[in-house]
Image 1 (cartoon, rainbow, N blue to C red):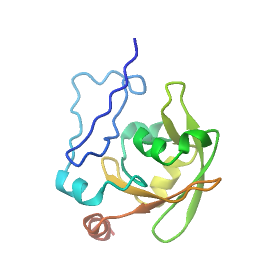
Image 2 (cartoon, rainbow, N blue to C red):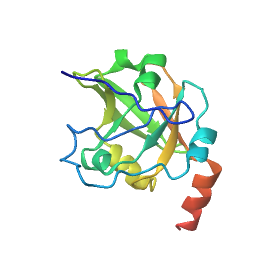
Image 3 (cartoon, one colour):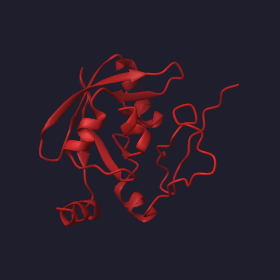
Length: 157
């Protein structure tokens, strides 16, 4: 039997989580906790064009980012799988990645996610906001830092 479970935070936004099928057996390991649930609530509105992405070690290892189903459905991205998607940082630099769909129906970004994270100094365990700014033939997602994320990034340099 297969089950699809959607974890929602206090703000009603979907959590990104590691799947048992994608990870080695995680029994006995500490599960990362949200560092600041208030920040999540502030940075995520009910805007269907936005979602929060957590940078998991597995997403870097497998060079993929799973997209929340509610985000994919509300923006019609399930019909564009097999195509490309553009990720843009705050400064306007863009990366073209593959948009794929698993047999289970989940949609993910592939081929370049690790490179995008490295170039933009996105850290494992970090939670980042993405907004769909163009939904044409090739969708464009833009990375947005909240004020507290920007301050944290500046201190690291």
